[in-house]
Length: 76
Image (cartoon, rainbow, N blue to C red; front, side, top):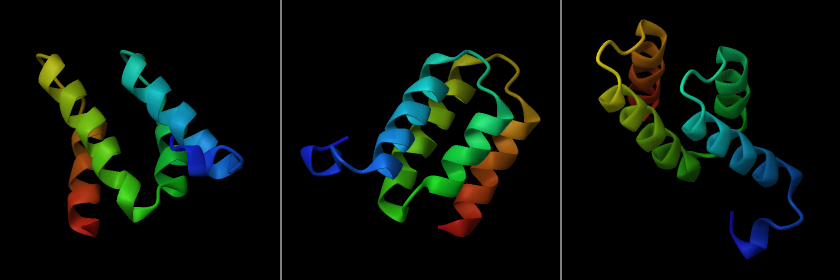
C-alpha cells in the first residue's frame, strides 16, 4: 500500500487480503474471491506473484489455485 492509499478502504482491504493470502498456507477460496473482485489491473501482477510462489512451494499444488492463475492469464 502506498501513502496515496492511506484513506482508501478498497486499497486497504486489498493490501490486507493480499498479505493474508501470502501468509496462509491454504488461503480460503472466499478470501481469494473477494480479493480478485477488488483488484485493479495494476494490482494483478502482485497477486499473480503470490499465487505462483504458493504453487512453487507445494509439491502438489491445488487445482483451484491453478485455475485461478489460468483465469488471470486469460484476463490479461
